[in-house]
Length: 341
Ligand SMILES: Nc1ncnc2c1ncn2[C@@H]1O[C@H](COP(=O)(O)OP(=O)(O)OP(=O)(O)O)[C@@H](O)[C@H]1O
Ligand SMILES: [Mg+2]
Image (tube, rainbow, N blue to C red):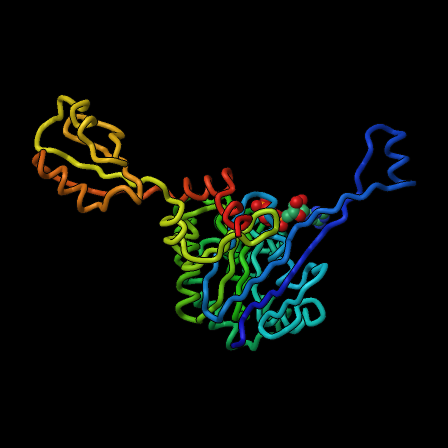
């Protein structure tokens, strides 16, 4: 099996000089530097197949950007093996450039003072893209990303959402098989986020582009990524689907029932509730029941309610994935799992 991305036992440590406080301390730090070692990425194993869309998530400082930078050849791993599109990123960085596109959401790769169109034209020469292919790609990208309204505006004057669309176009003009995106939706409004997600899905469907993206937005992961990788403190804690995370750590689900008439005595319902089910809220005829995954199958709970009340409507609410992920970070749920044999 050949992978688009293959990282084996990859480590990255940074040596940061500690500064002692005060003028004397500063002098001492120069003469006799005290070094602190930061393990940004530890024993990372990651393989990605052609055509996959993978979301890399983790709290601030988890090692996401460091991982992307090693996979693009910008940073040299301290140890371990990396292959991207069959190439070694650092020694073969020039060859690799033809196969990958990169977007760092926090900064632009476009020429700040030039109109967007000029940057896009310049890139043709940098990547040596044949004229006809470049024109065809540019025409398609103008349409997909709706670039025309600001094509002649200098990049410095673009809004964040427009700039991101320009950066995306710049990253894929040379038809890379693999696209890295480090926080591509950071700071964008809901409409701009939706447009970028749509573009990425289309790119993946039309060209089979493999995509690795980092994000703090769980909607990005839910809507784009069949596969999610969670890292924390440089370690991979999870590699699988969002659905599975929700299943394992989602906690309580909610059943929302609308009854035929307002419920006057919520207390009476509460006393009768089956084991593991609790009354979360009553508002007129609307009743919300929380129940854990192990407590009772959903259909049995509906039958139980139906035997006592006339039901107008029943819906279920899954826990918000945001909440699940927050609990994973805060309570170290996955860490405990990794630590236990
Ligand atoms: N050039 C560097 N020199 C020293 N330490 C660094 C350097 N780059 C990153 N680090 C450290 O490595 C760790 C991982 O940083 P990284 O930027 O990869 O995190 P991240 O997951 O991208 O976080 P964020 O969500 O905030 O972007 C952090 O502790 C960071 O301080
Ligand atoms: Mg980062």
